[in-house]
Image (tube, rainbow, N blue to C red; front, side, top):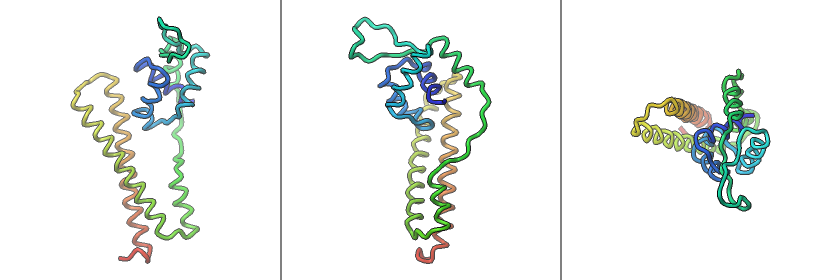
Length: 184
């Protein structure tokens, strides 16, 4: 049920068209809540039908034109209700962890360690990207509630990527040491 709420959040931050929303998901929200373009457009239709959003009025004919959406009072109320809801933490569901577990019962040779190294590099790249966002944001020096909350989300991303980089370093070292083919 979180995608509609992610869209409501994005639209409250800035009224947008479906295309603009998909771009914003690709650049920001998608770092922690991904959605395809088709999912976003489908949810926009559902949100509009539910009376949570509306297409902004335009002077030009709407046929073939992109619609820009804004959140209505009922949409804001729904988002407030959802934010205040209790929710249990979700269990980690990562295919890499399952593949690593499976490697304990089948032989994969050096391929698994190489895949762990590849994942480590991907997480290190994302960590560098998040730290660049932090550097950029701190240079702006805004102290609004929105800035503080977004900074907390970004710090969570930094901490999560740091976890993965550190954990993968240890896993790689452990598995490389245990593999006689990998040398000393």
